[in-house]
Image 1 (tube, one colour):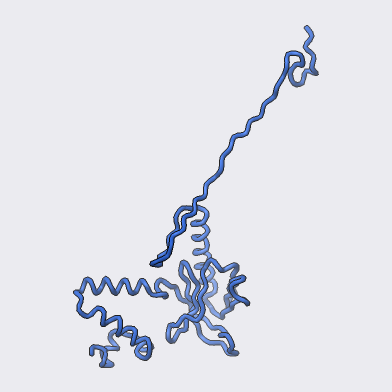
Image 2 (cartoon, one colour; image 1 turned 90 degrees about the vertical axis):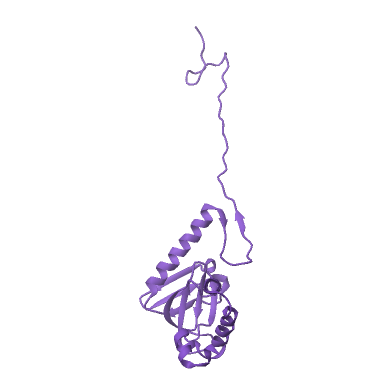
Length: 198
């Protein structure tokens, strides 16, 4: 009932999300919050936002050749602390997604950016963008964090609910080495030619 009027939809939802599956999902989640007090409704809303795949992403505008297409199409390149996501700018549908740990190399140019996901993707993934340097800096920062976590060891816990945490303990191994020299009464010390005559 609340969402029947276009005027009300305008107040709570961007134009591109007012039709199709998007609005159905919004209404479905909204119905779950109807009979809750303000505090609980806000808490549930915050939980819902945090659970979205696209929460916490830094987006960059780009163009790419989608699989099977010849023309360049707009795409949003999203970077999080764990993933690199390619999202349709019109409906926010995730087109491709790769863990940041799968990124083996990257290259920024003035008008493009290229990702190399090694064995996890057949070809390099190149996008045309004027924001290549900013993407490179963000990716390098997240890679540094991943490397530091791995170097420091300890517990690394992801933010996903239901994930199993794996603990890696890394430490230096220490040992003791000894070196000894044995001499006899008959042979003299080092450097004296073995003479002990008096």
